[in-house]
Length: 156
Image: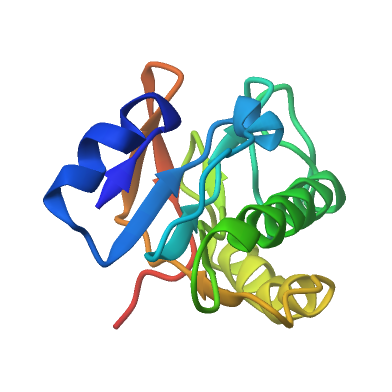
């Protein structure tokens, strides 16, 4: 069951087996004062301080973090997930969007570069105590009031 801290106690009335927190950048400060029998899933924030995270970023822009900054912020989410999991049972899961976003259609060469960056980016993260999942995204996403192209992880 997807939850936010303010509605956590109300959601427990439904006896969920899993609690999924969809992080925003403010959730790095999230503290819990109870223990839970459920498993923890964290859906990593897609943007942080008004810029998209993008682990395959070819360049930083005013709306997209660099690959390096994105990895740093995802590592913080991993670390926070492990900290929060002290209040839950089982191994936690973190879901991350890989990025590859652009306002324009990317060229095949750009797409191939982004796809080649994925493995290297994931290997830079320390997630040995977290089940780490990259989420396949639809071809278009809506951020900051506009349509963005998702350029990686689309084919079946």
